[in-house]
Image (cartoon, rainbow, N blue to C red; front, top):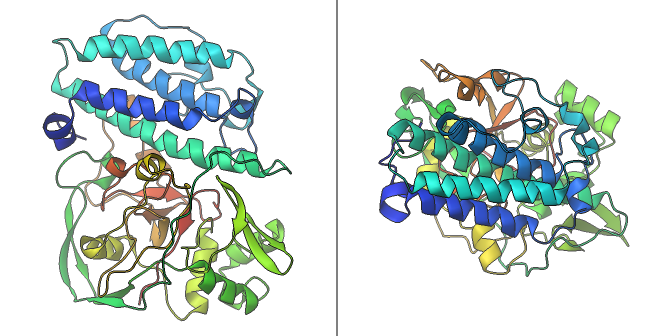
Length: 421
Protein backbone atom coordinates (compact mmCIF):
# COMPACT_ATOMS: atom_id res chain seq x y z
CA UNK A 1 0.00 0.00 0.00
CA UNK A 2 1.07 3.58 -0.52
CA UNK A 3 1.18 6.20 2.17
CA UNK A 4 0.10 9.81 2.01
CA UNK A 5 3.79 10.71 2.04
CA UNK A 6 4.31 9.07 -1.34
CA UNK A 7 6.70 11.40 -3.22
CA UNK A 8 4.41 11.41 -6.24
CA UNK A 9 1.77 13.03 -4.04
CA UNK A 10 3.65 15.47 -1.88
CA UNK A 11 6.79 16.39 -3.83
CA UNK A 12 5.67 16.47 -7.44
CA UNK A 13 1.89 16.57 -7.68
CA UNK A 14 -1.00 16.77 -5.29
CA UNK A 15 -3.36 13.81 -5.18
CA UNK A 16 -5.95 15.80 -7.16
CA UNK A 17 -3.38 16.84 -9.78
CA UNK A 18 -2.23 13.28 -10.25
CA UNK A 19 -5.82 12.06 -10.50
CA UNK A 20 -6.52 14.59 -13.23
CA UNK A 21 -3.31 13.77 -15.10
CA UNK A 22 -3.99 10.03 -15.12
CA UNK A 23 -7.57 10.54 -16.27
CA UNK A 24 -6.42 12.91 -19.05
CA UNK A 25 -4.00 10.32 -20.37
CA UNK A 26 -6.88 7.86 -20.73
CA UNK A 27 -8.62 10.51 -22.84
CA UNK A 28 -5.49 10.80 -25.02
CA UNK A 29 -5.34 7.02 -25.50
CA UNK A 30 -9.00 6.76 -26.46
CA UNK A 31 -8.99 9.93 -28.59
CA UNK A 32 -7.95 8.29 -31.92
CA UNK A 33 -10.69 5.66 -31.65
CA UNK A 34 -14.16 5.63 -33.16
CA UNK A 35 -17.23 4.41 -31.29
CA UNK A 36 -17.02 1.24 -33.41
CA UNK A 37 -13.38 0.68 -32.43
CA UNK A 38 -14.33 0.94 -28.76
CA UNK A 39 -16.94 -1.81 -29.10
CA UNK A 40 -14.88 -4.74 -30.42
CA UNK A 41 -13.70 -7.69 -28.33
CA UNK A 42 -11.36 -9.73 -30.52
CA UNK A 43 -10.69 -12.57 -28.04
CA UNK A 44 -11.67 -13.39 -24.44
CA UNK A 45 -8.48 -11.83 -23.00
CA UNK A 46 -9.24 -8.53 -24.76
CA UNK A 47 -11.79 -6.13 -23.33
CA UNK A 48 -13.51 -3.45 -25.43
CA UNK A 49 -12.03 0.01 -24.91
CA UNK A 50 -15.40 1.30 -23.75
CA UNK A 51 -15.44 -1.35 -21.02
CA UNK A 52 -12.01 -0.20 -19.78
CA UNK A 53 -13.26 3.40 -19.72
CA UNK A 54 -16.30 2.45 -17.66
CA UNK A 55 -14.56 -0.03 -15.36
CA UNK A 56 -11.82 2.39 -14.29
CA UNK A 57 -14.53 4.95 -13.54
CA UNK A 58 -16.57 2.36 -11.64
CA UNK A 59 -13.48 1.69 -9.49
CA UNK A 60 -13.34 5.26 -8.19
CA UNK A 61 -17.10 5.45 -7.72
CA UNK A 62 -17.24 2.12 -5.87
CA UNK A 63 -14.16 2.30 -3.66
CA UNK A 64 -14.03 6.06 -2.98
CA UNK A 65 -17.22 7.97 -3.70
CA UNK A 66 -19.76 5.40 -2.54
CA UNK A 67 -18.05 5.22 0.85
CA UNK A 68 -18.29 9.00 1.19
CA UNK A 69 -21.50 9.92 -0.60
CA UNK A 70 -23.44 6.71 -1.04
CA UNK A 71 -24.94 7.60 -4.45
CA UNK A 72 -24.18 5.92 -7.79
CA UNK A 73 -24.51 7.08 -11.39
CA UNK A 74 -26.38 3.96 -12.54
CA UNK A 75 -27.18 0.88 -10.43
CA UNK A 76 -26.73 -1.47 -13.41
CA UNK A 77 -23.09 -0.43 -13.85
CA UNK A 78 -22.09 -2.38 -10.74
CA UNK A 79 -22.89 -5.62 -12.59
CA UNK A 80 -21.73 -4.56 -16.06
CA UNK A 81 -18.37 -3.05 -15.08
CA UNK A 82 -17.24 -4.99 -12.01
CA UNK A 83 -14.27 -7.07 -13.15
CA UNK A 84 -13.67 -9.77 -10.51
CA UNK A 85 -14.51 -8.34 -7.08
CA UNK A 86 -16.75 -11.03 -5.61
CA UNK A 87 -17.11 -9.08 -2.37
CA UNK A 88 -18.83 -6.30 -4.37
CA UNK A 89 -21.23 -8.53 -6.27
CA UNK A 90 -21.71 -10.60 -9.42
CA UNK A 91 -19.96 -9.70 -12.65
CA UNK A 92 -20.98 -9.84 -16.30
CA UNK A 93 -18.98 -12.66 -17.99
CA UNK A 94 -15.63 -11.41 -19.25
CA UNK A 95 -15.68 -13.26 -22.62
CA UNK A 96 -18.98 -11.54 -23.45
CA UNK A 97 -18.04 -7.91 -22.76
CA UNK A 98 -18.12 -7.19 -26.48
CA UNK A 99 -21.86 -7.92 -26.46
CA UNK A 100 -22.67 -4.93 -24.24
CA UNK A 101 -23.77 -2.30 -26.77
CA UNK A 102 -25.68 -0.33 -24.14
CA UNK A 103 -24.90 1.97 -22.37
CA UNK A 104 -23.64 3.90 -25.35
CA UNK A 105 -20.13 5.29 -25.59
CA UNK A 106 -21.57 8.76 -25.02
CA UNK A 107 -23.27 7.55 -21.84
CA UNK A 108 -19.96 6.08 -20.62
CA UNK A 109 -18.24 9.41 -21.32
CA UNK A 110 -20.95 11.15 -19.31
CA UNK A 111 -20.26 8.68 -16.51
CA UNK A 112 -16.56 9.47 -16.59
CA UNK A 113 -17.20 13.22 -16.58
CA UNK A 114 -19.60 13.00 -13.64
CA UNK A 115 -17.26 10.84 -11.55
CA UNK A 116 -14.32 13.09 -12.44
CA UNK A 117 -16.27 16.11 -11.20
CA UNK A 118 -17.26 14.41 -7.97
CA UNK A 119 -13.74 13.11 -7.36
CA UNK A 120 -12.26 16.57 -7.94
CA UNK A 121 -14.66 18.10 -5.44
CA UNK A 122 -13.90 15.40 -2.91
CA UNK A 123 -10.10 15.48 -3.29
CA UNK A 124 -10.11 19.27 -2.94
CA UNK A 125 -12.02 18.98 0.33
CA UNK A 126 -10.97 18.31 3.94
CA UNK A 127 -12.00 14.65 4.25
CA UNK A 128 -9.11 12.88 2.49
CA UNK A 129 -7.67 10.65 5.20
CA UNK A 130 -4.55 8.56 4.82
CA UNK A 131 -6.58 5.41 4.15
CA UNK A 132 -8.61 7.20 1.47
CA UNK A 133 -5.41 8.52 -0.12
CA UNK A 134 -4.09 4.95 -0.23
CA UNK A 135 -7.24 3.79 -2.00
CA UNK A 136 -7.02 6.67 -4.50
CA UNK A 137 -3.40 5.77 -5.29
CA UNK A 138 -4.44 2.18 -5.90
CA UNK A 139 -7.18 3.48 -8.20
CA UNK A 140 -4.71 5.62 -10.14
CA UNK A 141 -2.27 2.77 -10.60
CA UNK A 142 -5.20 0.53 -11.48
CA UNK A 143 -6.21 2.96 -14.24
CA UNK A 144 -2.62 3.05 -15.51
CA UNK A 145 -2.75 -0.73 -15.77
CA UNK A 146 -5.91 -0.42 -17.83
CA UNK A 147 -4.34 2.29 -19.99
CA UNK A 148 -1.74 -0.29 -20.94
CA UNK A 149 -4.47 -2.83 -21.59
CA UNK A 150 -6.33 -0.32 -23.76
CA UNK A 151 -3.25 -0.05 -25.98
CA UNK A 152 -2.51 -3.78 -26.14
CA UNK A 153 -6.18 -4.66 -26.59
CA UNK A 154 -6.87 -2.16 -29.38
CA UNK A 155 -3.71 -3.36 -31.13
CA UNK A 156 -5.12 -6.89 -31.15
CA UNK A 157 -8.50 -5.59 -32.31
CA UNK A 158 -7.02 -3.63 -35.23
CA UNK A 159 -4.74 -6.53 -36.19
CA UNK A 160 -7.87 -8.60 -36.88
CA UNK A 161 -8.95 -6.09 -39.54
CA UNK A 162 -7.53 -7.19 -42.94
CA UNK A 163 -6.85 -3.54 -43.85
CA UNK A 164 -4.48 -3.29 -40.83
CA UNK A 165 -5.56 0.23 -39.85
CA UNK A 166 -3.22 2.68 -38.11
CA UNK A 167 -4.12 3.57 -34.54
CA UNK A 168 -1.75 6.54 -34.32
CA UNK A 169 1.01 7.74 -36.62
CA UNK A 170 4.47 8.05 -35.12
CA UNK A 171 8.14 7.92 -35.95
CA UNK A 172 10.31 4.96 -34.99
CA UNK A 173 13.42 5.82 -33.02
CA UNK A 174 16.67 4.74 -34.66
CA UNK A 175 19.32 2.84 -32.75
CA UNK A 176 22.11 0.32 -33.00
CA UNK A 177 22.36 -3.39 -32.45
CA UNK A 178 22.32 -4.81 -28.95
CA UNK A 179 25.23 -4.80 -26.58
CA UNK A 180 27.16 -8.04 -26.16
CA UNK A 181 28.02 -7.09 -22.58
CA UNK A 182 27.08 -9.35 -19.66
CA UNK A 183 26.90 -8.03 -16.11
CA UNK A 184 28.03 -10.32 -13.32
CA UNK A 185 26.63 -10.42 -9.79
CA UNK A 186 28.24 -12.10 -6.82
CA UNK A 187 26.52 -14.54 -4.55
CA UNK A 188 25.15 -13.15 -1.32
CA UNK A 189 22.11 -11.99 0.62
CA UNK A 190 19.93 -9.43 -1.17
CA UNK A 191 16.84 -7.56 -0.06
CA UNK A 192 13.85 -8.09 -2.36
CA UNK A 193 10.52 -6.26 -2.51
CA UNK A 194 9.01 -2.83 -2.00
CA UNK A 195 10.59 -0.49 0.51
CA UNK A 196 9.34 3.06 -0.17
CA UNK A 197 6.71 4.92 -2.17
CA UNK A 198 3.68 3.30 -3.76
CA UNK A 199 3.66 -0.45 -4.27
CA UNK A 200 0.99 -3.09 -4.74
CA UNK A 201 0.50 -5.60 -1.96
CA UNK A 202 2.11 -8.43 -3.97
CA UNK A 203 5.47 -6.58 -3.86
CA UNK A 204 5.62 -7.03 -0.08
CA UNK A 205 6.84 -7.81 2.45
CA UNK A 206 10.43 -6.84 1.78
CA UNK A 207 12.59 -9.80 2.67
CA UNK A 208 16.09 -11.19 2.38
CA UNK A 209 17.03 -13.85 -0.10
CA UNK A 210 20.29 -15.69 -0.71
CA UNK A 211 21.28 -15.52 -4.36
CA UNK A 212 23.88 -17.61 -6.12
CA UNK A 213 26.21 -15.75 -8.49
CA UNK A 214 24.72 -15.05 -11.93
CA UNK A 215 25.10 -13.07 -15.14
CA UNK A 216 22.53 -10.98 -17.02
CA UNK A 217 22.71 -9.85 -20.66
CA UNK A 218 23.30 -6.15 -21.27
CA UNK A 219 20.36 -5.87 -23.70
CA UNK A 220 17.05 -7.64 -24.33
CA UNK A 221 16.89 -10.26 -27.09
CA UNK A 222 16.46 -8.58 -30.48
CA UNK A 223 14.35 -9.31 -33.54
CA UNK A 224 17.51 -10.18 -35.44
CA UNK A 225 18.39 -12.85 -32.89
CA UNK A 226 14.83 -14.13 -33.07
CA UNK A 227 15.01 -14.44 -36.85
CA UNK A 228 18.09 -16.65 -36.35
CA UNK A 229 15.98 -18.81 -34.01
CA UNK A 230 13.23 -19.07 -36.64
CA UNK A 231 15.65 -19.90 -39.45
CA UNK A 232 17.29 -22.57 -37.28
CA UNK A 233 13.93 -24.33 -37.06
CA UNK A 234 13.09 -23.09 -33.59
CA UNK A 235 9.34 -23.47 -34.13
CA UNK A 236 9.67 -26.83 -35.89
CA UNK A 237 11.79 -28.79 -33.40
CA UNK A 238 10.41 -29.86 -30.01
CA UNK A 239 13.74 -30.43 -28.26
CA UNK A 240 13.98 -26.91 -26.76
CA UNK A 241 10.33 -26.61 -25.74
CA UNK A 242 8.47 -27.40 -22.57
CA UNK A 243 5.79 -30.03 -23.26
CA UNK A 244 2.94 -27.56 -22.79
CA UNK A 245 4.78 -25.03 -24.93
CA UNK A 246 5.23 -27.47 -27.78
CA UNK A 247 1.54 -28.31 -27.57
CA UNK A 248 0.74 -24.59 -27.83
CA UNK A 249 3.01 -24.26 -30.88
CA UNK A 250 1.17 -27.06 -32.65
CA UNK A 251 -2.36 -26.17 -31.60
CA UNK A 252 -2.00 -22.43 -32.23
CA UNK A 253 0.34 -22.83 -35.21
CA UNK A 254 2.99 -20.41 -33.96
CA UNK A 255 5.86 -19.85 -36.36
CA UNK A 256 6.94 -16.33 -35.32
CA UNK A 257 6.08 -13.71 -32.69
CA UNK A 258 2.53 -12.41 -32.68
CA UNK A 259 1.88 -9.72 -35.35
CA UNK A 260 4.79 -10.88 -37.57
CA UNK A 261 3.88 -11.67 -41.19
CA UNK A 262 6.04 -12.86 -44.07
CA UNK A 263 5.88 -10.71 -47.23
CA UNK A 264 8.18 -11.11 -50.26
CA UNK A 265 10.73 -13.10 -48.26
CA UNK A 266 10.91 -10.39 -45.57
CA UNK A 267 9.42 -10.17 -42.11
CA UNK A 268 6.88 -7.42 -41.45
CA UNK A 269 5.25 -6.57 -38.13
CA UNK A 270 1.93 -4.93 -37.34
CA UNK A 271 2.35 -2.03 -34.94
CA UNK A 272 0.05 0.64 -33.55
CA UNK A 273 1.53 2.83 -36.31
CA UNK A 274 0.74 0.30 -39.03
CA UNK A 275 2.52 -2.53 -40.83
CA UNK A 276 6.30 -1.94 -41.02
CA UNK A 277 9.43 -4.00 -41.75
CA UNK A 278 10.93 -5.81 -38.78
CA UNK A 279 14.16 -4.11 -37.78
CA UNK A 280 16.82 -6.55 -36.53
CA UNK A 281 18.00 -4.18 -33.78
CA UNK A 282 14.57 -3.82 -32.14
CA UNK A 283 13.83 -5.79 -28.96
CA UNK A 284 11.60 -8.69 -29.88
CA UNK A 285 8.13 -8.48 -28.34
CA UNK A 286 4.76 -10.25 -28.29
CA UNK A 287 6.30 -13.60 -27.40
CA UNK A 288 4.92 -15.95 -24.78
CA UNK A 289 6.74 -17.41 -21.80
CA UNK A 290 6.87 -20.69 -23.70
CA UNK A 291 8.64 -19.00 -26.63
CA UNK A 292 10.98 -17.05 -24.37
CA UNK A 293 11.95 -20.20 -22.51
CA UNK A 294 12.50 -22.13 -25.75
CA UNK A 295 14.69 -19.35 -27.18
CA UNK A 296 16.76 -19.24 -23.99
CA UNK A 297 17.33 -23.02 -24.09
CA UNK A 298 18.18 -22.88 -27.81
CA UNK A 299 20.75 -20.16 -27.19
CA UNK A 300 22.41 -22.05 -24.35
CA UNK A 301 21.14 -19.63 -21.73
CA UNK A 302 18.12 -19.32 -19.47
CA UNK A 303 15.62 -16.75 -18.28
CA UNK A 304 16.52 -14.88 -15.09
CA UNK A 305 14.49 -15.42 -11.97
CA UNK A 306 12.46 -12.43 -10.84
CA UNK A 307 14.89 -12.04 -7.92
CA UNK A 308 17.94 -11.98 -10.20
CA UNK A 309 16.15 -9.46 -12.42
CA UNK A 310 15.35 -7.20 -9.48
CA UNK A 311 18.94 -7.29 -8.24
CA UNK A 312 20.27 -6.55 -11.73
CA UNK A 313 17.77 -3.73 -12.26
CA UNK A 314 19.65 -1.61 -9.72
CA UNK A 315 22.21 -1.12 -12.48
CA UNK A 316 19.69 -0.95 -15.33
CA UNK A 317 18.12 1.89 -17.28
CA UNK A 318 15.65 2.63 -20.07
CA UNK A 319 13.35 5.39 -21.27
CA UNK A 320 10.77 4.03 -23.70
CA UNK A 321 7.45 4.56 -21.91
CA UNK A 322 3.97 5.32 -23.23
CA UNK A 323 3.69 8.87 -21.92
CA UNK A 324 7.18 9.82 -23.12
CA UNK A 325 6.74 8.30 -26.58
CA UNK A 326 3.31 9.91 -26.90
CA UNK A 327 4.53 13.42 -26.09
CA UNK A 328 7.50 12.97 -28.45
CA UNK A 329 5.28 11.89 -31.37
CA UNK A 330 6.96 8.50 -31.56
CA UNK A 331 5.35 5.17 -32.34
CA UNK A 332 4.31 3.05 -29.38
CA UNK A 333 6.66 0.23 -30.29
CA UNK A 334 9.94 -0.87 -28.69
CA UNK A 335 12.97 0.38 -30.60
CA UNK A 336 16.71 0.08 -30.14
CA UNK A 337 18.64 2.49 -27.96
CA UNK A 338 22.27 3.48 -27.98
CA UNK A 339 23.72 0.99 -25.47
CA UNK A 340 25.81 2.30 -22.62
CA UNK A 341 29.06 0.38 -22.50
CA UNK A 342 29.31 -1.88 -19.48
CA UNK A 343 25.71 -1.19 -18.40
CA UNK A 344 22.45 -3.11 -18.45
CA UNK A 345 20.38 -1.41 -21.13
CA UNK A 346 16.63 -1.07 -21.74
CA UNK A 347 15.74 -2.78 -18.49
CA UNK A 348 12.87 -0.41 -17.79
CA UNK A 349 10.35 0.32 -20.54
CA UNK A 350 10.60 -1.12 -24.08
CA UNK A 351 9.31 -4.64 -23.31
CA UNK A 352 8.07 -6.54 -20.30
CA UNK A 353 10.70 -9.22 -19.65
CA UNK A 354 9.64 -12.75 -18.82
CA UNK A 355 11.30 -14.33 -15.81
CA UNK A 356 11.43 -18.00 -14.90
CA UNK A 357 9.59 -17.32 -11.63
CA UNK A 358 6.09 -18.55 -11.01
CA UNK A 359 3.83 -15.85 -9.61
CA UNK A 360 3.59 -16.68 -5.90
CA UNK A 361 3.42 -14.91 -2.56
CA UNK A 362 6.51 -13.55 -0.83
CA UNK A 363 7.26 -15.00 2.63
CA UNK A 364 4.85 -13.50 5.15
CA UNK A 365 2.45 -12.11 2.57
CA UNK A 366 -1.25 -11.80 3.31
CA UNK A 367 -3.86 -10.00 1.17
CA UNK A 368 -5.30 -6.74 2.50
CA UNK A 369 -8.69 -6.88 4.17
CA UNK A 370 -11.84 -6.10 2.21
CA UNK A 371 -12.65 -6.16 -1.50
CA UNK A 372 -9.31 -4.61 -2.48
CA UNK A 373 -7.69 -7.73 -1.06
CA UNK A 374 -8.90 -9.51 -4.20
CA UNK A 375 -6.65 -7.33 -6.37
CA UNK A 376 -3.57 -9.58 -6.58
CA UNK A 377 -3.43 -12.47 -4.16
CA UNK A 378 -6.11 -14.68 -5.65
CA UNK A 379 -4.31 -14.82 -9.01
CA UNK A 380 -1.16 -16.51 -7.62
CA UNK A 381 -1.55 -19.70 -9.64
CA UNK A 382 -0.43 -20.86 -13.12
CA UNK A 383 1.17 -17.54 -14.06
CA UNK A 384 4.72 -16.23 -14.53
CA UNK A 385 6.25 -12.95 -13.42
CA UNK A 386 7.34 -10.25 -15.89
CA UNK A 387 9.40 -7.23 -14.93
CA UNK A 388 10.35 -3.79 -16.18
CA UNK A 389 7.38 -2.24 -17.99
CA UNK A 390 6.98 -1.60 -21.71
CA UNK A 391 6.21 1.03 -24.33
CA UNK A 392 2.58 0.77 -23.23
CA UNK A 393 3.45 1.57 -19.59
CA UNK A 394 3.60 5.06 -18.11
CA UNK A 395 6.95 5.99 -16.61
CA UNK A 396 5.65 6.74 -13.10
CA UNK A 397 3.72 3.47 -12.97
CA UNK A 398 6.61 1.01 -12.95
CA UNK A 399 9.51 0.30 -10.57
CA UNK A 400 12.08 -2.50 -10.10
CA UNK A 401 9.90 -4.28 -7.52
CA UNK A 402 6.78 -4.27 -9.75
CA UNK A 403 5.46 -7.79 -10.43
CA UNK A 404 3.41 -8.16 -13.59
CA UNK A 405 2.03 -11.62 -14.27
CA UNK A 406 0.42 -13.52 -17.14
CA UNK A 407 -0.24 -17.14 -18.15
CA UNK A 408 2.65 -18.77 -20.05
CA UNK A 409 0.87 -18.74 -23.42
CA UNK A 410 -0.05 -15.01 -23.37
CA UNK A 411 1.37 -13.07 -26.33
CA UNK A 412 -0.70 -9.93 -26.84
CA UNK A 413 1.23 -7.90 -24.27
CA UNK A 414 4.50 -6.15 -25.16
CA UNK A 415 6.44 -9.06 -23.68
CA UNK A 416 10.05 -9.92 -24.51
CA UNK A 417 13.03 -11.41 -22.72
CA UNK A 418 16.57 -10.97 -21.47
CA UNK A 419 18.98 -13.86 -21.07
CA UNK A 420 20.82 -14.99 -17.97
CA UNK A 421 23.44 -17.53 -16.96
